[in-house]
Image 1 (cartoon, rainbow, N blue to C red):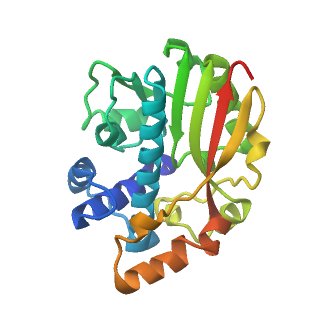
Image 2 (cartoon, rainbow, N blue to C red):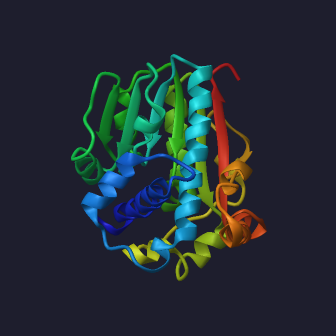
Amino acid sequence: MDSVNKTLYIPLYGKSYVSRKGIIMHDPKAEQIWAAEGFPLKGKSKSKWLAYYLGMRAAVFDRWLEAQMDADPSAVVLHIGCGLDSRVERVGTQGHLWFDIDFPDVIRERKRYYQEIAGYEMRGVDVRSAEWLGSVPGGNAIVVMEGVSMYLRSEELKQVLGQIAAHFDKVRMLMDCYTAFAAKASRVRNPINDVGVSQVYGLDDPKLLEGDGIAFVGEHGMAPADLVGELRGMEKKVFKALYAGSIAKRMYRLYEYRRDRWT
């Protein structure tokens, strides 16, 4: 895999780490895959503070997705940038048609650990190409795009959202983004540097992606108080200073978008 695709090992490690500790989220699949892969992370990418944060980020996405699936039982689920993540097992398809989507070489790796079943498919595609949507049923869609936007220029990101909006009647999407400041700082101070990535992109104004019926809904936090509360003592204090305050917000945001055909 190329350097960008190797970044999938960083959140995989984070989820396996917190799952082994019995906090934030239960993810035995992440534990299994991490033990088997043994990818040699180093430096900041193997920080326990980052592991806590990535575990919390995944839990926030999971919670949002579950709520959306409950609210729209007929919607298709698109997990863009799935990597080796076990979200489909943690959340369950619950009768929804679910597509896990990533680059072809990532999906080839993923298929070593996951099997397609009725209602669950994996697609190895470049999400910037609209062709892959042709084989996905229309109607309504719930989209999670975690750890993806920072590798796409804003015009590419807007194009992806527009293609999804054109294909579906109704869309609900949750997406994390770097700020422009974080993108600049990431050239020298980011865990992804440890796997060879230095070029990323940031988005300060979420409304820049509006268009083609896509509207910005609001912002979500990535360090909920109940999950931060699972840390103890000085760990809790240090984590809150690093990842649950103004410093974190200056670097990293979580945006929700929607598209309703009739608006």
